[in-house]
Image (cartoon, rainbow, N blue to C red; front, side, top):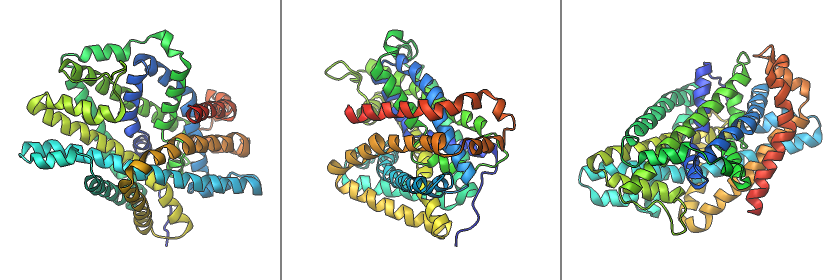
Length: 450
């Protein structure tokens, strides 16, 4: 039978866990490649504005619903609904969130498996196992399946431990490790020839380009998605927060950490690209644009590491360990969304729920692995381009229009007695009711219409 719901043991425990959810491959991989493709510092400037003006208010909507309901996303949205129709809509939205989080984890586990494999390749090279190293870095069904299974097992084992002994315990270990490795890599890369050119590209903005409409939409989308918004992961983490905590302050802390690590990742990746160029590695494509995304992570940077001799082995290993940690801190929140529903609604134990849901998602991942060309991009498109923005919009509408305003204020005041007189309460309700829905619709329309 399901036991009592868990709760984070401390403010720091929640911040590390929620920040870990937000800080994933979208920060370490997605943000730098977006910045590299959208004018460097111009994109960085607009990303910072969008994160505080729009992503933070949407994050607060999920956290507040979660802490009020103390339940999974389906039950939570039913609780804040005002009538039969909105309860029905809330139920559908909740299930859509669970399905979307599960499908995201299904393809995310494959990508995370690549990170583990690439982390093992330098070690194989050191011991002279060049054939193994080649297999680890080569694309193939067997490799993809093996390392996806390893990653999914790690995620399942963490979640099966519960809130304090699983999510909080491992987030408290993994997040400091991630930060130490990231800062160490930055410190080393900035000493290399060519790095300062990348720093200039990253930190010196072309203000005229900052207000390009396409760049603004891209920055808004990156800010929104990098905080893991829209699929209920932050809602379920919010349900484990004590009523004594100032939830507005917690939301600010998560946003600052998420933004900070994304900015630090840019300070690693973009200078590293110019170091690679200095060492003779191609970083521009035939049209003159910076090479980005999978080509950057799995071709440009490994090529850079190869030019660095023995040091490159250490740096390459550390980099892909960093990427694996970032993936793992996010994957545990994705798995928690469906696991919490099965555990609370269907009465299965935490461990049984974790292994049941993990098995189902692993089956989906396996189907994607063996039908990669047809399904991989399709699943990414359906979840991140269509479902996630739509679900983010629905959560904003529930808080802004469906849930009674006085109940929202009462929940915020639980750990913040002066909330009604604060700037947060003067501004946030307007943002969540009008500005965030319009902004999310803008991103949605741009992604749908191209």
